[in-house]
Amino acid sequence: MQSRDGRSARETYRFVHASGLHLDSPVRDVGGAPEALRAALRDASLRTWDAVVESAIAREVAFVVLAGGLFDGERATLRACVALGAGVQRLRAHAIDVFIARTAEDMEAAPRLPLLAEGATLFDHDRMSTAYAMRDGACLATLHVAAGADAEARRLQSALRPSGLGVEIGVLPQRPAANDARGLAELLAKTGLAYWAVGGASQYAVLQEEPPIVCAGTTQGRGLEAAERGPKGCVLVEVDDGRVGSTELIPLDHVRFASLEVDVSACADAAAMRRLLVDAADRVRDGAGERLHVVEAVLCGACAARDAGDRLALERELLADLRRAGTPERTRLWWARVRDRTSRSNRRTGAAPGDLRRIVIDRSEALDAPLPRGRFLARTFAPLLRRWDAESDLDTQRELVRDAAALALDVVEAEGPR
Image (cartoon, rainbow, N blue to C red; front, top):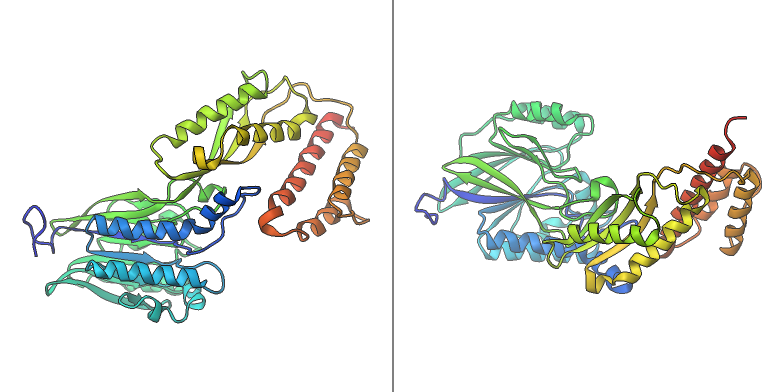
């Protein structure tokens, strides 16, 4: 078997390393979205897995390594199981081997995975396992999987030794929580393997350049938390002349989450702020193709033109204006929320503790959620947080808590020390 440049496929080939598929997992922190966007968010993890499969086929890789995190929740959904099985079958139909390192959570979520992923090589979740990627009787690579709880995983990693067959690849499906990045890299480097495919983390990271120790991150972001933002996808690894060469993150996420921080110090009004935010969003979308973006706007800098009591009104006004400016179908972008983090030089002094209580009481009555008696902050919001359906009103729940906290801070700062 020869590569395009005539060298042996044993010496020159590619493979894909992916982790954290979280198939059919929910997306968080996106309230008020139209139905078309909600459907895209529901399908995002499945569509991204399809993109991983298509990318592997298009790049004619030799094999695919999935380093844990297949599912989300206690039980894999039917859609997740069907998607995983179909992807494996498509890869195998193109003579691409599939190696799956499972975590304990994967085992619990899908105990019948051997039937679902027929044709794939499955590794045990609690011990050291070895498998071989073969082509035409030649060994392309030896894969060593060290899985288990923290202490056991560290012991297994320390016990790993190269076999001398093909390129030696280590797979760690669940990054030990007790190890920091440097400690983990030092431990894995001592094994003498040529590449480590690490899972169990949300963000892509190269823990060490030589030998490459790479966290693939998740294939699809699931919210606006820092770890879920930015490009997501799979890692393409080049093997050249029997040695691991370049590694590259291939962004394949169907929906991308982003936080846009904009200095609005020079803005005289909300319209000027909106123009700045739209320009920033246009830069984010450049080169994004058909990818959807879910974005939060963070206002920073000085904002002396508006007083402290206008924070909530400004956020709502800007969010409504931004959403009116374009629909996700036309702009491929949804403004999830606006956060005012500006500093205020002329805070109003007319606020009083009673104003805060009155505002929150008024809102709770409007929502038909009476406030309990007793300790104010400790007991007021807990019933509200448990009251509403997560998909339709989670954003409202969080907004109420956040607004009350911001108002309380404004009152304290306005009153000053007593």
